[in-house]
Image (cartoon, rainbow, N blue to C red):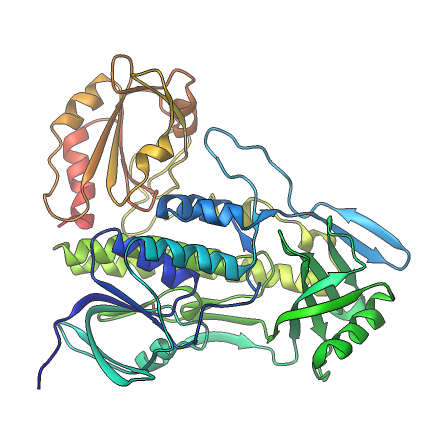
Length: 505
């Protein structure tokens, strides 16, 4: 039998998590294929909130411009109670700062986010293969063999690694027999409808809450005449079918005869699942996104958590393929599973609060924005490591405003962008040792940035010093996923080498 040469990575599922992972792997020069059983890209608005941290990730991956063009800032809520409409600010609007360039949650229908990611992937020379479904998976010590069914029959694909990003009903997860602990309440269902709508102001995210958790909501989809309608169904209610029945149901709840739905673009019945995969890895197969965790829709967490799964995993797969210790892939579950568990708790609490008509459940703040998520205390960020006055190892690396030697202002994020590690030296002693820091020739390379008077960049506005809590000479190692891999205020070379070893070939 002629066994095909293995590709590096096969990704099963082309939603936001799978597409983001593919972009990250392809830009690292890996041989990647992405298959999805759907006949074409997703067409609904479903997950419509992209959080500030995810916007930073999308900027690094090169998809941010299209995402920003396809969305807008969330409008205020309009809570309708009888004849009264109460304005309610769900998201506090913030201005960009030197350390947080994208402080506001971005409203964009998921189909546009998917298209932005797919367009970026195609720019890099990789195209999603729609209409191709994984039907069987086996693995040995060296590779994974996957049978993929398409219109042209069954194809056998060999890959060094496989990542399942194929949603809550993941065939990859089921094929690995990995438990999906949690609950599904079949009596708690929502009908989601994307429809061109008239008779409703577009400057509000409208909600008509009623006792017992009954709810109808309508969120305007930017740059269109459509709204995403959410109708929370009663336990034994059959979802209304067809435009006339849906309009009748909305009018009965809202007591508004002016509302009219025209073209219905997409509908779906959604059951909030609250589940977490017991493991994220089995051998050469890994899980990410909804295949690893599913949430209630409250708080706009699912898509964002999946994209950041991908951002954590991509560089680790590439490093292992370049010769790093295979145990680096075990840190993926160790770092990301606790994050997902926390997000599950947050979104579940918010969802329960909405049922109780608790106004605080409709507030969104720093917990939802995911800027404070940290890997501190994990296998790559020991709790006894050095820290600054503001940051610990494992924390998100903030942005800052620097001044180049040519007098041009530069964002630190512009310097960090790309698939490499970055070492930042602040002060003369740190800069001296940075020049002598050895780095492996294989795998992700190291960008070296010295900051200070007479160097390539200076911190004249002190935004770096303040955001990073620097009091003296410091050497910072930033991981490819924008988290701090090491902080050294002394023994720069020795401690940085030791910290880099588990992450490099």
